[in-house]
Length: 584
Image 1: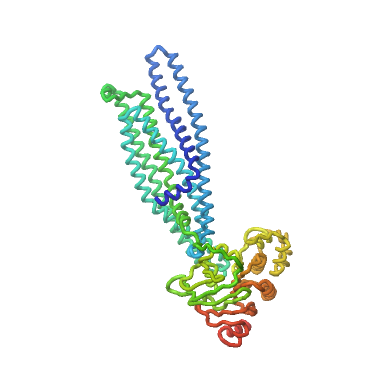
Image 2: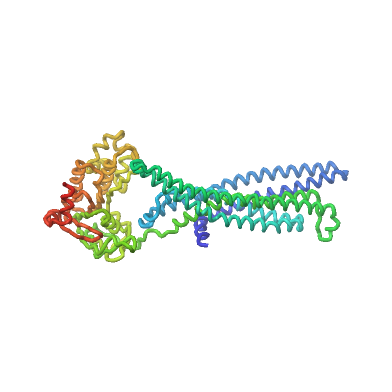
């Protein structure tokens, strides 16, 4: 029921379109199903010609009936075209809404929910699973909609023509339905496994493509090929079983329907030959009437056959819908805070903060420090000591277990997190360049469109020279694989942060991919940029943080040393050893 209500929410805005589709389906189905009655009457008229003197009158009647059939055919075709058009519009509108909402949901989810899932699998849900839903809806929706109407109309007509033969046809139908249901239930689990295996394979492929150089460097291609084939074999087995079991439905129901057809033909012929025996039951049957009933017997079975023929697509679509539904029903990033910062970030305080990604290992342990406006704090320590985790906590990507994070003496979680993040610019170790011009990449996240300011930001980031050497300068189209070096892409990201001109800056290994000469220039640019601004810098290369007001040395989530560069060198502790080891 929860899934039904979920789908109903998407259908509600299109309810009038759905009613129109239903009306068209009813009219064109009735128009098509009246034709066998008229055809049966024509057969009876032809039979009557052998014993009647009014041949001209009968021929006129036959001609009129044939003309009426032609008009019904044309009318039903026109209505069916409209039905197909509106049905496709309805389905694509639903699918577009699903796709839009799924992409929006990815952007609204908490980082912790995204980090716990394979990126390849998330991509597969947005592309492949949505496509499966589309195919299932286009095939299944129309067959179900049109089929149910056909079943009801044929049922009424058959009972009107001959209730006994109608009962024979209807009584055999539940057996056909039960067999379809039984087989569908059997193969449903294989479609679920197929969708899951497809997600694993897609994630594995994306991972391999992103790390192709590493695979080749370590001669690991054979191992990756083996693992890929293992996952692919798992997908093959699930897919083969799902397809095999689903294909049993159609031939099984067709077999039962053909048996029904033969039985109706036999009983109908018996009723015509021994018509006097059935008069007492109020049953009469002509040759034309039997012909019409035989057509309806096939027509009555056809919707069931059509529906059973789409079981594969429907099962696949339902398995994909469950995967999309799983993401769409996840909670958005919690942002219960209503308070707004009425000023710049003047003070950041961490008090006895504890955090762990799981209960077995504490990442941050009773961490406390103060950062005032205009100060620069640098955090150093060995890999895995919790440096980047601190940034994730300050940004509100993860929630602390104990302690407090205060912004201008307000609890971080009482603030409107979106408005809070508007005050911050981040430059990370991993660069992100999207498909667009250099100018657009630098201006990303900023309202500034003044080209002079964009160029000025690039100059401060030491990126202007190499940008001007590109084919079209600042209007050159670039992407992650457009031939720019990692260092050049990082300079563009730094220019992006400089252009935003925030009051709070976070640099997480921001100069890690830049050569020493460029690093020196960028460090000087940052010194100018960060003056009178609040900032947190994470760096492995310690010369870049010498001008920090406070340097925090972390080990296993705890502060083991703190002070400015001169103090820490004088103390000759862990920082002193780390600093000298880099120079050595």
